Image 1: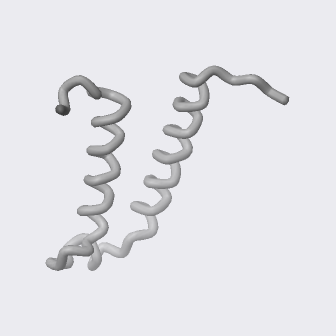
Image 2: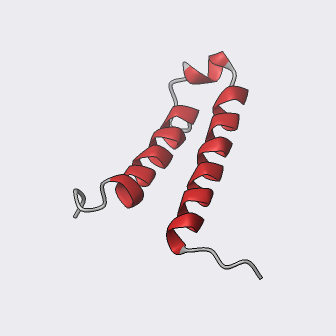
Amino acid sequence: MISRSLSEMLRINTQKSLWSLRNVTDCILDSMWRALYSGTPLKHICHTLHSLDRWYINPYVYT
């Protein structure tokens, strides 16, 4: 069994998440980016990036 540190696992999983997010954004049609409804892809992408910021980059900024 391969033993990995917590920071290494977080780095790997974060890279995979960002890779997946990039694939999703590349597949979204231009017309969907301009849609004016609550389910727009941009809303979900912003939520994902905000969560990454909150938990990994600036965890002490949020209360």
